Length: 128
Image 1 (tube, rainbow, N blue to C red):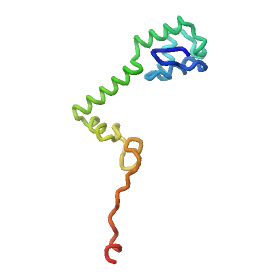
Image 2 (cartoon, rainbow, N blue to C red):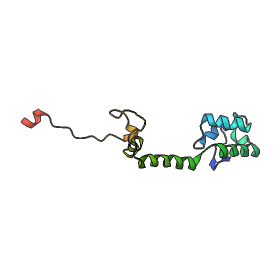
Image 3 (tube, rainbow, N blue to C red):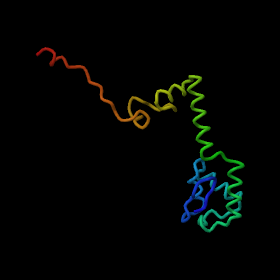
């Protein structure tokens, strides 16, 4: 298995797909990296030479923030928003959707499973 920036990428996939296994590299950036490194995107990852692999790694190190460093950067940005108590920071603290989605219905991914609250008793039940 070839290693790129500390991540084992799958051998049997095309190199442009295999690069997307690195956190922070998507389809578009994968194609741009391969174009700059002058590597054919459709070649399998196990057919890449050491020279090509080193060129890909150098481009990623030079131009992209990936892996643990990217995760750290994102979490620092979120903690900064929480510290300054801006609207987005408050939404992160309360574990609610941050980007303007509705919360009356939906938003179950962010809010978690439903917690049923006992409703008021009806008028008929209190008389009898």
